[in-house]
Length: 394
Image (cartoon, rainbow, N blue to C red; front, side, top):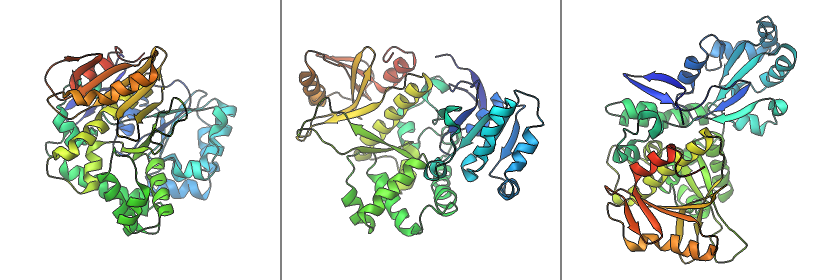
């Protein structure tokens, strides 16, 4: 995949792989992923409406038709950016009229889709593409990233460039509670939500036990379910659902929840500034690799869904992807040595799918590629290089 734009962060140049759109687009991504920098680099001449500016919000909330009056005077085909568009969902009705009437093109960016989805907002009736921005990925920084640092501090641009990313990550977690949750009145019980966040972050990448989390956070089960919806809608995490080739009582039916970034998960869990323990490292490496796979599938336009596979007796495969070339299965282990038992889940999955066996891979933190029967085992850095080179998924 060819880099299409460079954006400067601190003293380093990073090639962002998100392509410049040619038509109106919703651009969603968590705070701090670099949306604003990317927009400035790609649309330097666009008219900007920044809804983080209280004066701009007040002006447009009072009378959304002001947007129509101002934008309709621009030359046909002009680009307009509305940043944090979810703060005034009513503007989308105006945007819809402008697209049809004047040919204006918009970048509608935001760090939360909650108000748009919950409020039944006009999502432009298919007249706008939907795209996501992820944290930095290894292909954007020349694969020059240490796996240990990536799982300890994540891949947000500031976490990558700051010599000491811990203060930034702690501030990020606090900002999320203050600006996304309290300011948007997503829940009245900030204390309960804070307890939930820490517990959910500590269970990142595990089979989600909603009842257990509710008990530990001292809130109702239905409240925990609503809290997870907040995390998804504010783009702080995503569900990974189990893959079931056919109905079976032998397969686990509960999903896993992954935070969008390992560093943010650690900040929310309260485990900074200490380095990850061996117990943490496995889920953090999964978070890192799963995030890169999801970003690759989004940026490449392939869009294949990502699942995991697990039986009731504990045989598991971390990633299962159905591609046009067949199934692809990956087991991820935070270990410098590949133990034969690590491939148990891959073997069980392969046997259950015979004769249409998946392509099986193991990912570990060892220094070089290994052979383990029908399983190809590669270091994490090699796996990610081959992923972004297009050699693993097509």
